[in-house]
Image (tube, rainbow, N blue to C red; front, top):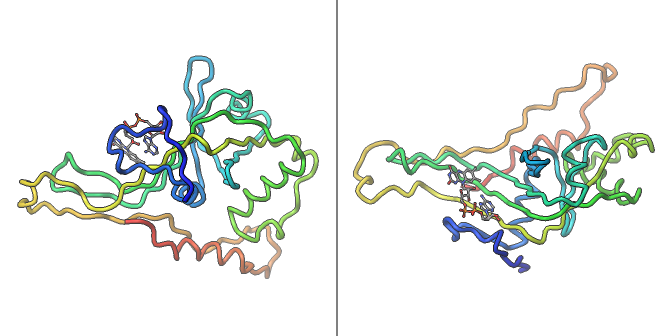
Length: 225
Ligand SMILES: Cc1cc2nc3c(=O)[nH]c(=O)nc-3n(C[C@H](O)[C@H](O)[C@H](O)COP(=O)(O)OP(=O)(O)OC[C@H]3O[C@@H](n4cnc5c(N)ncnc54)[C@H](O)[C@@H]3O)c2cc1C
């Protein structure tokens, strides 16, 4: 199993047993999460901006308006920190102190670079659309040259990265297990509602299979406890 080498910057200090540098763990969190947060310093002000992402092999890709400060700053090879978080449950303890959440998270450090090659850029946009709903690209109008020019795509190597995973019940102090305050987990997961058809669709239009399947895929996910 491929494992990244922890660096001085990615080595977990608190509860390092929850950390993982396995690509399989890192990749599965990146692939399940729909949103990442890109952190960067702009002059002396740090910004952390939420955005969509997609992973392909050893690279994480984000995209957006060519006018975006986040993308332009990151594209100038400045260091970025990308974080991804999945919340799996609320953890209620007997003591106030030991309340927590179950989660899976990833931190990636590195320098982002622009993807300018037309075909490579189109490939990333396709992957982003396919991540929203597998099979979707074939059911959309492809981007025009103008739309492509207005879109910036950035890639970040997944080389200096860490994952952290919390599972299980609260870890109360031994004496507190005699208390009768309720302790346990409230599992959480992202849920999809029934697809809502755009009112400007022609009357009588039906919802295609790939859309129904995507909505259903959220129901199927068991999540981590
Ligand atoms: C949803 C959620 C809620 C949390 N709530 C709390 C809280 O209330 N209080 C609290 O102290 N901590 C909380 N944490 C944990 C927090 O993210 C840090 O792991 C922790 O604060 C301290 O980490 P550290 O000192 O080991 O790492 P730091 O010294 O801060 O970081 C060193 C390196 O460790 C790695 N790392 C650290 N944290 C993570 C992470 N979460 N995922 C992946 N890599 C990581 C990174 O590569 C980082 O560069 C929470 C995490 C999540 C995902």
